[in-house]
Length: 326
Image 1 (spheres, one colour):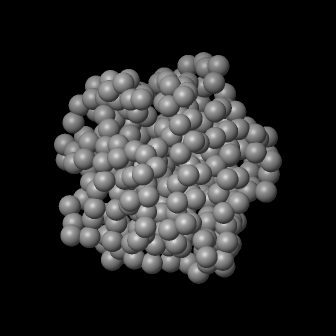
Image 2 (spheres, helix red, strand yellow; image 1 turned 60 degrees about the vertical axis):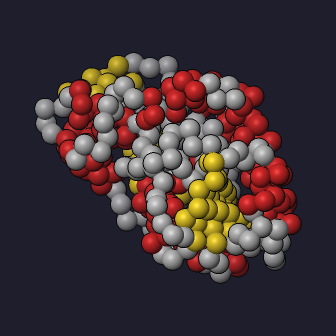
């Protein structure tokens, strides 16, 4: 497989993944609305950017033939963004999904990799949430992620290999940086305000470094069909309490960082097991949360993240509101 299409490829993960694919000899196409800018994308002879909407069926029919694999990242990508415009979220996250899968299969695409979410489990009391546990999505965002998993499973066949990943929250530096994710939020505040406010703090958040996320997608392109066909994998590394993450940030940024803890009504606590993906396909993350914090610290010091407290581009909800995305 040489020709790879990434939907949402100008996003937080996609802008890193496209570079890693190019470095490994793939021909990469990206379809994206580009609402966070096109300058985040690489410039390369084997790279093609398509400014377009995955809801555009005719566009999909024109760009999917000839692709060997699709990595489907495109979505309205977290609960607050989704709640901003539920109908928009449904149209992109759910309604556009099955037509795309159908076109992919009809076009002889060999492999379809779907980025679901670890939020499909809802809140579990058990310390290790495994892939065989019942799903209990709490929001429309996670409900539609779970529904798309079911849709995709129907299309699995010997000629069309499907695999679903349920990632933890991704962290670390990217050319299309998000500063509305736990580790990234806390690091931004520590560097630029010298103060972190932790709401509650006992809630657990599973995390995965963005370079490990990209490495996993590369692995999923390389493995033989029988290793992944029709399977679902959690993808995380460290399950830490938010208060613990704040302490990691202070340890990396400096002792001058003040941590303020306040009460919260949001006690959602997520934690996942990543034993299956380790055992079955040998995926073991090699980057830590501290690595992600250090990478962000370095990027701040190199002036790669200007106006990080005020620029809407770093915050999904603010940018969607600004451009009135429909």
